[in-house]
Image (cartoon, rainbow, N blue to C red):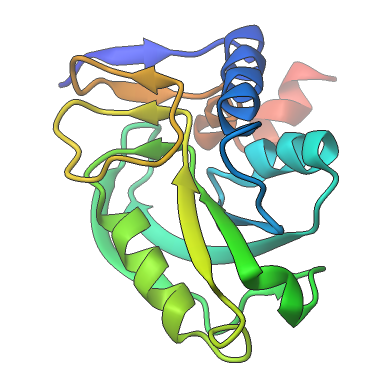
Length: 173
């Protein structure tokens, strides 16, 4: 079993704020595209800070029944969900929670460049995430935490991966 890095909610918020400060002044995206599920809370915060539209692409890349799942084949959703207009995709900031192997970010860039109806509007795609693992082959354009190892990162919401509704009923009865 690999080493685990357990992130508190305060540490998480601080990392997102550091990411925003790193982006500011160096890039002004016209849309934020989040890789679901990991990027959802990051995009929520960044969209409030930068006041720009959002879009989400759903990719299944991990499978298993516990917090420490295994990366498998990437499966992209057929369509993107967006509140952005096509012309908003001029300068894309593609966001994920971490650069683990680099595969998801690389394939997501390829997918965006081929995705109708926005592919002809994209001038530039930059990438951002909170953590980059040491062995990742992909270096995001913006990343506040460069790890010197490859721990399994347990984010605040991942607590719920091992809890079901019956557990919550017992807890709150």
